[in-house]
Length: 171
Image (cartoon, rainbow, N blue to C red; front, side, top):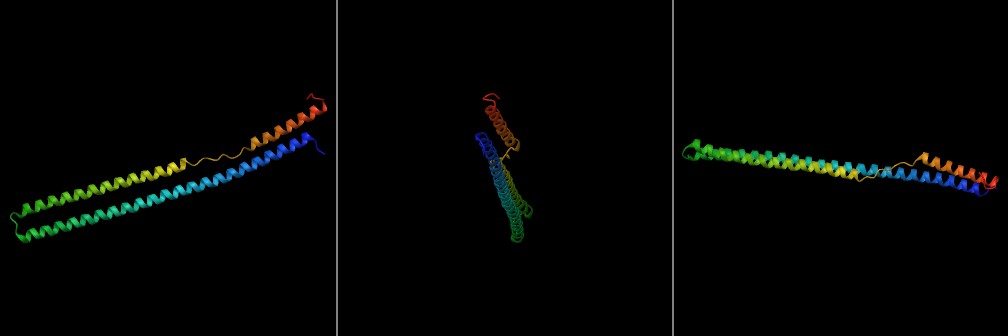
Protein backbone atom coordinates (compact mmCIF):
# COMPACT_ATOMS: atom_id res chain seq x y z
CA UNK A 1 0.00 0.00 0.00
CA UNK A 2 1.26 3.46 -0.73
CA UNK A 3 1.21 6.41 1.56
CA UNK A 4 0.26 10.02 0.97
CA UNK A 5 3.77 10.99 -0.17
CA UNK A 6 3.84 8.20 -2.79
CA UNK A 7 0.37 9.18 -4.02
CA UNK A 8 1.45 12.82 -4.29
CA UNK A 9 4.56 11.78 -6.26
CA UNK A 10 2.55 9.59 -8.63
CA UNK A 11 -0.05 12.32 -9.12
CA UNK A 12 2.65 14.95 -9.81
CA UNK A 13 4.38 12.70 -12.37
CA UNK A 14 1.13 11.77 -14.13
CA UNK A 15 0.00 15.41 -14.18
CA UNK A 16 3.32 16.62 -15.58
CA UNK A 17 3.42 13.94 -18.29
CA UNK A 18 -0.22 14.60 -19.21
CA UNK A 19 0.38 18.36 -19.32
CA UNK A 20 3.43 17.87 -21.57
CA UNK A 21 1.48 15.63 -23.96
CA UNK A 22 -1.40 18.11 -24.07
CA UNK A 23 0.94 21.03 -24.78
CA UNK A 24 2.63 18.94 -27.49
CA UNK A 25 -0.74 18.23 -29.13
CA UNK A 26 -1.73 21.92 -28.96
CA UNK A 27 1.61 22.91 -30.51
CA UNK A 28 1.15 20.38 -33.31
CA UNK A 29 -2.39 21.64 -34.00
CA UNK A 30 -1.32 25.31 -33.93
CA UNK A 31 1.59 24.60 -36.25
CA UNK A 32 -0.75 22.88 -38.72
CA UNK A 33 -3.20 25.81 -38.55
CA UNK A 34 -0.34 28.28 -39.12
CA UNK A 35 0.84 26.34 -42.17
CA UNK A 36 -2.67 26.40 -43.61
CA UNK A 37 -2.90 30.15 -42.94
CA UNK A 38 0.41 30.69 -44.71
CA UNK A 39 -0.72 28.59 -47.70
CA UNK A 40 -3.96 30.60 -47.86
CA UNK A 41 -1.99 33.88 -47.76
CA UNK A 42 0.29 32.60 -50.54
CA UNK A 43 -2.71 31.49 -52.60
CA UNK A 44 -4.41 34.90 -52.21
CA UNK A 45 -1.16 36.67 -53.17
CA UNK A 46 -0.76 34.54 -56.30
CA UNK A 47 -4.42 35.10 -57.22
CA UNK A 48 -3.89 38.86 -56.87
CA UNK A 49 -0.77 38.70 -59.04
CA UNK A 50 -2.69 36.71 -61.64
CA UNK A 51 -5.43 39.37 -61.76
CA UNK A 52 -2.81 42.11 -62.05
CA UNK A 53 -1.06 40.24 -64.86
CA UNK A 54 -4.36 39.83 -66.72
CA UNK A 55 -5.10 43.55 -66.33
CA UNK A 56 -1.60 44.34 -67.58
CA UNK A 57 -2.14 42.16 -70.65
CA UNK A 58 -5.46 43.86 -71.32
CA UNK A 59 -3.80 47.28 -71.00
CA UNK A 60 -1.12 46.28 -73.52
CA UNK A 61 -3.83 45.03 -75.89
CA UNK A 62 -5.88 48.21 -75.45
CA UNK A 63 -2.81 50.32 -76.20
CA UNK A 64 -2.05 48.32 -79.34
CA UNK A 65 -5.68 48.64 -80.53
CA UNK A 66 -5.71 52.39 -79.81
CA UNK A 67 -2.45 52.89 -81.72
CA UNK A 68 -3.73 50.85 -84.66
CA UNK A 69 -6.98 52.82 -84.69
CA UNK A 70 -5.04 56.10 -84.61
CA UNK A 71 -2.77 55.01 -87.48
CA UNK A 72 -5.78 53.93 -89.55
CA UNK A 73 -7.55 57.22 -88.86
CA UNK A 74 -4.42 59.14 -89.90
CA UNK A 75 -4.12 57.14 -93.11
CA UNK A 76 -7.81 57.71 -93.85
CA UNK A 77 -7.54 61.45 -93.19
CA UNK A 78 -4.41 61.74 -95.35
CA UNK A 79 -6.08 59.93 -98.22
CA UNK A 80 -9.16 62.14 -97.89
CA UNK A 81 -7.00 65.29 -97.87
CA UNK A 82 -5.02 64.20 -100.94
CA UNK A 83 -8.14 63.24 -102.85
CA UNK A 84 -10.08 66.37 -101.89
CA UNK A 85 -7.38 68.75 -103.12
CA UNK A 86 -7.15 70.97 -100.01
CA UNK A 87 -4.74 73.88 -100.50
CA UNK A 88 -1.15 73.17 -99.42
CA UNK A 89 -0.92 69.41 -99.02
CA UNK A 90 2.29 69.70 -96.96
CA UNK A 91 0.55 71.92 -94.37
CA UNK A 92 -2.47 69.64 -94.29
CA UNK A 93 -0.18 66.64 -93.62
CA UNK A 94 1.71 68.54 -90.92
CA UNK A 95 -1.54 69.46 -89.21
CA UNK A 96 -2.84 65.90 -89.32
CA UNK A 97 0.50 64.49 -88.16
CA UNK A 98 0.55 66.90 -85.22
CA UNK A 99 -2.90 65.77 -84.16
CA UNK A 100 -1.83 62.17 -84.66
CA UNK A 101 1.29 62.65 -82.51
CA UNK A 102 -0.84 64.24 -79.79
CA UNK A 103 -3.17 61.23 -79.90
CA UNK A 104 -0.20 58.85 -79.58
CA UNK A 105 1.08 60.85 -76.62
CA UNK A 106 -2.30 60.56 -74.91
CA UNK A 107 -2.34 56.82 -75.54
CA UNK A 108 1.18 56.46 -74.10
CA UNK A 109 0.28 58.60 -71.07
CA UNK A 110 -2.85 56.55 -70.35
CA UNK A 111 -0.90 53.32 -70.75
CA UNK A 112 1.82 54.51 -68.37
CA UNK A 113 -0.80 55.54 -65.81
CA UNK A 114 -2.37 52.07 -66.06
CA UNK A 115 1.01 50.39 -65.57
CA UNK A 116 1.81 52.55 -62.53
CA UNK A 117 -1.58 51.72 -61.02
CA UNK A 118 -0.93 48.01 -61.59
CA UNK A 119 2.49 48.31 -59.98
CA UNK A 120 0.80 49.89 -56.96
CA UNK A 121 -1.63 46.97 -56.92
CA UNK A 122 1.31 44.53 -56.87
CA UNK A 123 2.76 46.36 -53.89
CA UNK A 124 -0.63 46.27 -52.15
CA UNK A 125 -0.92 42.51 -52.78
CA UNK A 126 2.52 41.91 -51.28
CA UNK A 127 1.71 44.11 -48.28
CA UNK A 128 -1.51 42.18 -47.72
CA UNK A 129 0.38 38.87 -47.77
CA UNK A 130 2.95 40.30 -45.36
CA UNK A 131 0.19 41.47 -42.98
CA UNK A 132 -1.38 38.00 -43.10
CA UNK A 133 1.98 36.43 -42.23
CA UNK A 134 2.50 38.94 -39.41
CA UNK A 135 -0.89 38.03 -37.90
CA UNK A 136 0.09 34.37 -37.57
CA UNK A 137 1.03 33.76 -33.96
CA UNK A 138 4.06 31.51 -33.54
CA UNK A 139 3.57 28.33 -31.59
CA UNK A 140 6.30 27.35 -29.14
CA UNK A 141 6.83 23.65 -28.48
CA UNK A 142 6.49 22.46 -24.90
CA UNK A 143 9.67 22.21 -22.88
CA UNK A 144 10.79 18.66 -22.26
CA UNK A 145 13.45 20.00 -19.90
CA UNK A 146 10.83 21.94 -17.92
CA UNK A 147 8.65 18.84 -17.62
CA UNK A 148 11.66 16.81 -16.51
CA UNK A 149 12.49 19.40 -13.88
CA UNK A 150 8.90 19.28 -12.57
CA UNK A 151 9.15 15.49 -12.22
CA UNK A 152 12.53 15.79 -10.47
CA UNK A 153 11.09 18.44 -8.16
CA UNK A 154 8.22 16.11 -7.26
CA UNK A 155 10.77 13.36 -6.55
CA UNK A 156 12.81 15.65 -4.30
CA UNK A 157 9.66 16.71 -2.43
CA UNK A 158 8.80 13.03 -1.99
CA UNK A 159 12.28 12.33 -0.63
CA UNK A 160 12.08 15.26 1.77
CA UNK A 161 8.67 14.15 3.01
CA UNK A 162 9.88 10.57 3.50
CA UNK A 163 12.95 11.77 5.45
CA UNK A 164 10.81 14.04 7.60
CA UNK A 165 8.53 11.15 8.40
CA UNK A 166 11.46 8.85 9.33
CA UNK A 167 13.40 11.42 11.29
CA UNK A 168 10.48 12.98 13.13
CA UNK A 169 10.36 16.33 11.32
CA UNK A 170 14.08 16.72 10.63
CA UNK A 171 15.30 16.22 7.13
